[in-house]
Image (cartoon, rainbow, N blue to C red):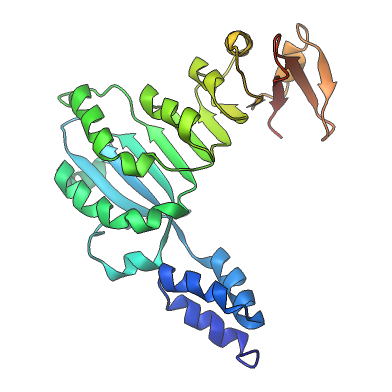
Length: 271
């Protein structure tokens, strides 16, 4: 099969759905292996967006990576088996200009349930969902989230949130075996993680960091935490209270040792 031109193999891959495409890796052929590795990076990623509207309706669509293009009609479309979903996002409200696309929760289920075969490719979850306003009841929101748990109970390495139900965050800290990084508010709940974690606060102050580290110190079974802040002079400011050292990258960092274990709390600046 090595006589097959690379361009032919690459063009064939474009015609295969995800299931058939994954099988080409078992061919153990030089040309097909090369075509697969190149083609994998060129498949377009999509984000699945679900919006909980204040009036009790929903929006649901796929958004192409690094684009404002949306796919509005999702159910029963053959092209769904050719795309890759790498992010699932739950948000409140949604774009006002998409009011004509509002749907019921059952219509959302009709759309997302057929997407289950695509979920293993998801790498990140986004949450901007908290206590709703208007006529939409918080109990209804929690009920709907429970019915959508197959979309957020995923083994993903990254979790980004601005508002996030505590039970959702707790599930990931305890049961998401692949979780490596969170971006969001500096919540005390993060110190209960069962695995080492990189924490990127969206907004933080020295007081926030001190309170967070105190929570971590009180945890009898802590894990290593690496907190990466955006402010360039943050480490030097807090270094007036805590000792500063130099990490392997030559950057200033603060490292605190847990009082009763070998776990470390490290503070660095985003580079």
